[in-house]
Image (cartoon, rainbow, N blue to C red; front, top):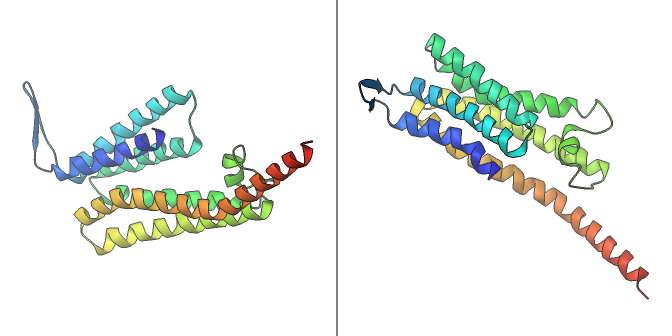
Length: 203
């Protein structure tokens, strides 16, 4: 459910963009959607609601979700105030590069890298595997940030909006699969070792 909630603001962003030029009427009040700017406003509102719902569900907020919310509000506000879509288009790249820097820096600060701090309570892996995984995530964030700007500057605004939605699903699935491939053999090894130990204890 939490994963679905994370994509709702992006879905609403795309839907609002697709209805560019449409007029919403509530009694005497009317508002005409104006493309990327209305979509950005919808994204901001949806993100704030999303963060509030996640807090109500878990009674706490993941730092990643909190930073995502702040980035949307900051870059979205700049987009609306300056009437310049460049800010919202740069937001995914800046956020992903920021994550890449944070994950890379955690390799040299403290006893555990950032990925192990996040997932270590659920997985018991050798230090070398945590290091390998962390660098994979660093590469992932870096590439995602670069590709976002490639699409933003080489293709139309409409193409970028579609890319923002589909790439969000695709890249999330991709990094999850890669993580599972790297982690899988070690989980099996741990399970096998556990079963062997249990067998040895049996009479």
